[in-house]
Length: 534
Image (cartoon, rainbow, N blue to C red; front, top):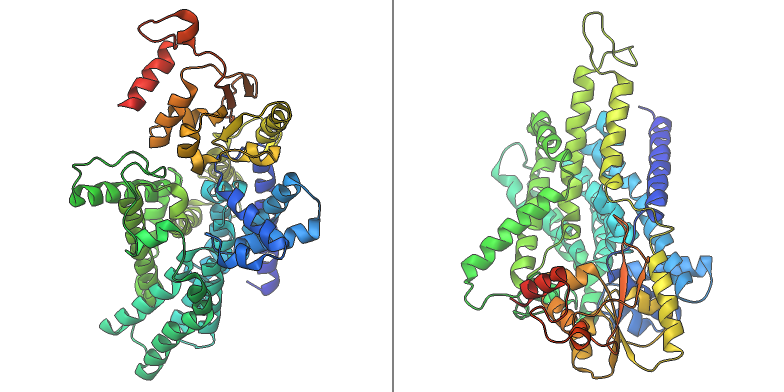
């Protein structure tokens, strides 16, 4: 294919990604509050407080810098302006991701798979999730994929000109998230294994120089930031993962469930391994998983790109080990943490689907009506591809005005109430309190809110109230079986987030109805509360 044809493909893919993300912006709702941390960090950077916004912040700075840069262009004041700047920065990073994705797939699987790989990864629900929730994985994945492409080019060609690109993009990925260091680490591990087989060996002097370059280069670029931070990162999860801090307390807020006192180390890692496999499997949609296996099989003979396959295998192994360690030390692991393995498996699925399309399509027939039997033609494959892209998103789509609409409404209500009342607010969503521009307790301060007698208003979603997390018990104790005084939206809608606001000055049901077996709580809530308290 000519360079022009590749350019047309990439342009159409970027337009498709932009259209899909634009649709998601108005049909899904935010469920994570982590993106708010990056907005606060960007606000510090915008004010010129570089020390607070970069060096003293818990999160790495590249994503907040991108948000601040977009805000400088868009302009505006107030929380909604910053929210829109964060949305624009996240969408821009996810759309630009198409370019390195296309080049990477082109390098590993060839031109017939390149467009399909970029499309399926851009349409992966994980990518949409991190984009809509304004998470730093958007910026991280953009630079990390560029670095991955450069690393694969180096392994195939052996030209040193690719190493500076690999190291430079790895450093940028690291400045977005600590996992950026995984790329040069995996490449060094690959180089250490290369001499073990004749098909992967490279010239010895060049081998030594490459290893030295990959060891020294990242520390020259990322070393000053590490020195200023005092380590790879200041996130507690990173410190626990590399063993410089003890594991999370048994009842830590971030744990999926409290750690049993009698659980052995063997059991801890067994549960972590099982959780890792579930997360890895969920990182590609159910329909893509068999296609991933097919894509790896039909990529044979692997000897044609032996170094690239070895590198990919080591990368997946290191990512899996990190996921296991994260769960074992922190007690939590979500699908977003498997975004890198999910990307690699989705590219393999694209190769499997491309092989099927090449194998059973009838040349020259659009629908695929053969002389004696029906065989799928391009139109049928196009319809199937549209279903693969649309169905994972359609299942979770809601009839919303925008992904922050419900938080805007709740924030306005809180701001109005706070103008007339001095009771403190505990907002487990964080976003409603941010849009209200009112003081109060955030999710991370739920323990303080639980012991503060002036805590009056509880803002929560059903996931906070009915969840199996440790903090759910505290939330239920604060609510005390009360009914919400207001909800947004007013009536529950399938697929939509509903925010409930409780007033602790309202008498609980038990005080109104007298002592009963269920203390005046509805049977459903009472059962859930008993389950949580166990």
